[in-house]
Amino acid sequence: MSELNEHRAGRLHGIWALTNRELKKWYKAPVIFLLSIIQPIIWMGLLGKAMNIGALIPTNIPGIDPATVMKTVLGTSDYFSFMAVGMIAFTALFTTMFSGMSIVWDRRLGFLNKALSTPVSRAVIIFSKVLSATLRSMFQAGLIIVVAIAFGLQFGANFNPLNILGVFAIMFLICVGLSSLFIAITIRSTRMETPMAVMNLINLPMMFASNAFFPTKFMPDWLQTIAKFNPLTYTTDAVRQLLIFNTDWAQLAWDFTYVGIFAVVVATIGIVLSWRFLSK
Amino acid sequence: MSEEVIKAEGLTKVFNKHLTAVDHVNFSVRHGEVFGFLGPNGAGKTTTINMLITIMKPTEGKASVLGFDIAKQDNNVRNVIGVVPQEYTADEDLTGLENVLLCSDLYGIPRKIAKERAIELLKLVELTDFKDKKVQTYSGGMRRRLELACGLINRPKVLFLDEPTLGLDVQTRVASWDYIRKLKKEFGMTLFMTTHYLEEADALCDRVAIIDHGKIVVVGTPEELKHSLGGDIITLSIKEDPDVSELIRAVENVKEVKNEAGSYRIKAEYGEVTAPFIIEALRRKGYTVTKLMLTEPTLNEVYLEYTGKSMRDAEESREAFRAQRITMRRARAG
Image (cartoon, rainbow over all chains, first blue to last red; front, side, top):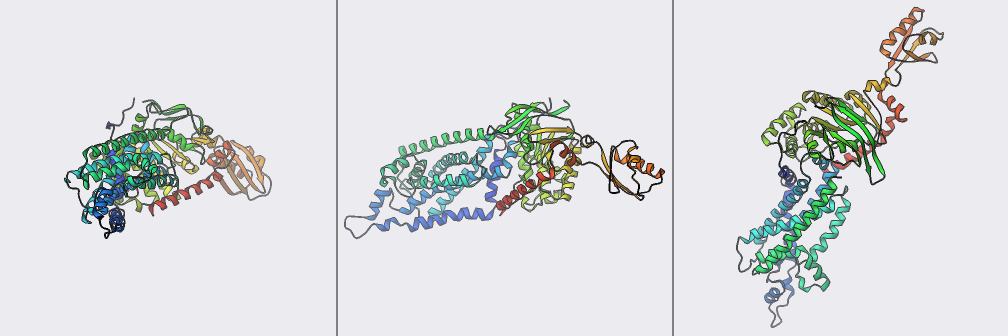
């Protein structure tokens, strides 16, 4: 019997090393880092300020007050605030998508095989991808909130700074879910094109069949049904409840439950699938 | 410790139910030796190594590394082996030192010990001056050495090298062999390597297994394999005209003599010892040898003998494959 590695490593060893490896590519590369900061600003400036929906409502018709109409339709009289929050979900979707691709690179460049030949757990390899995507999205979400405030985000009447923590919590859940989903899609792939196509197919419908940019209640029935199952709808609603609406606590609890269940279920599926494909 | 460090019995890998990459392979690697798998691209070398380093499960048969079953005790195997993969797996955006430390984290080695070891290993592979430079700036040879350092961070008992000098120019390749020899000596490890370079198998391996179409065709030391072909080739010319074939044939250890238009092609065992006897025999009869050339059979002749085809042909497609790989890496770096 020969002696084993003298450092009996824990089950989760290596998770921070692998996560940090992903994050370093981002925060150590000035251009990428800068772009990830500028991108939400541009999006918000363009989409939020260009689509001034409030201005579409005529002001010269007696009995119609644009602010009231907006309030009824959107839940807030300011479209920019409505949209800026939708942007947070949008960021989660796209940041996690690109992180999903990194496993394809790792496979193609041989790093994945190398990691698999070390005592690091298979689950840790997957977790680290999920974690790095999540941390990145949460950073960007924080940034969006700051930028949105600078651009004139109107907080809800009972807004409390602690609500920001709630935003990070829901971001954490949705990012864990989404990145697990994307990793499950990419895990078997050795090339970039196929998962990219699949993800684009998923992403845009997911974006628009949700309440991120427009309230669902004015959508056709079939689209409303899709939106009702779309976890992004619940994420966006939760963030709105926390930041710009008069918080409806029951609705907020339901949002958290739904997104939480989504995260757990998808993460489990992702991990089970990856486990199978990583050890064949 | 058991003499057999690696033992494979009927090891088989079938892909997609019909493509047999490795076909009932049996071999054992002894403690402290360098054991090489020699064969062309697609012969099943990498698949074999992937099974031994536990990243692929065998379809059939079994194998053990230091007594640990590769399928049932895979985590034990992973702890005692080091792997130097075919690809450059080091992260281009990180420095050399950061890369080695990343590897150490995958083994759960505490940071303090890891740092000492990393510094020591980087010195050993002569990368100390470059340890804080990003890997992007490294040359091919430096990257290979960095991979070696990463593969040794857990002080492995067995080191697996998959095509350790793939894509290096001849000088760098020879230098890499020196590093490998040095590291083996330093750490007293057992080495398992694959290669499709005949010179590499000859220069580095104590024993070689020639693998073709997923099957081992022959195993032995490079010397044994070459001797199994029946000796060296001596080519000589003499000043005088008459045919001296019979005279040469009478010399001990000479197997075969052919007169090819005044130049004699002689197949003989222990060529370097036999040649002086031939010269002596000719001189005694008054003939003068004007030219003599001794050719020892290379593994290429061995390969040819056992597989019926030349290794060089197989290499061509390999080069194309490598070119594609490099293009891809550039695409990423860009």
